[in-house]
Figure 1 (cartoon, rainbow, N blue to C red):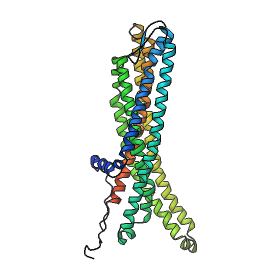
Figure 2: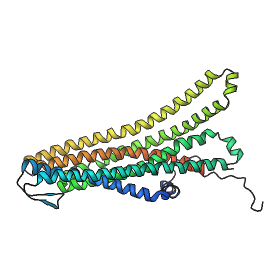
Figure 3: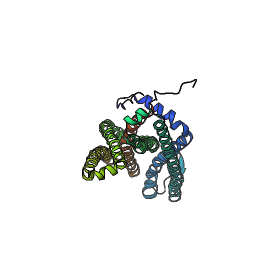
Figure 4: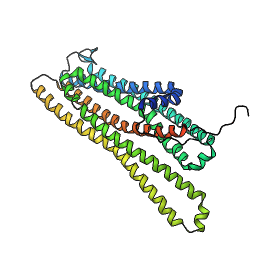
Length: 352
């Protein structure tokens, strides 16, 4: 039996994604597409709700007797804003809630279904392997893949994909809404995109390295635990309890270092992106205030723009965090496929 190839971090991404789709996601394509549709609807409605700030402030507080439009195409007669705008907010909120509930229910079923598929295939690969292969690799490696790697893949390619879709579309919808309000201010916002992209790449690389180390040490920990459970009688006879506890403690400490590095990369990506976003907000407020003093921007438009900008920052933080989740999932998928691709060398003859 050939030895498994080590999961290569530089393995081409496109074939890996194609295999994940072919072997797992395609079997649940209906639930996946429906959950992504719910995510897209929730993302678009978030932007629509914030876009209501402009007519709400102008119509309810500043120009109460002037005609206005909702979202640029629904006319509101003078004096009706007090009724129409709150009803519009409630209607959008109800639809958004239904879409979010549908998304959550579909993603939960989809994700755990994929984990089950992966675990069954891994068990099949283990039970079909040659005895020489099983003896050369401790079963702790398989346990690690079944319990740890499979859940990373689930998190990335169910919650990750759907939430990435939602927040990406929210970001697009928010930017489009901002363009309709003031394209100059939006251009200032877009100047920060290269900086945020640089932050995402840096933390993605750190996450991939830390995740690989965490997976390796999780496998070592599983092996150590199973060896101690299998040989507990011999350990007690030889009074090696303290030595084995120290050995497992070293493995746990090494694993913790990698896990903490991975968690730090995920946690730190958001604040750094938020720092860039706040700098952009400061620049926007300075420029918008200058334009408002010149009478070129209404209070409602400014409030709506700032609300949309803050929503864009929140969605951007989510996208940045999800980028690290996707990196962890891809690293786990490489390990899983390396284990699944091992073919037994000893086969039953065709005419046997």
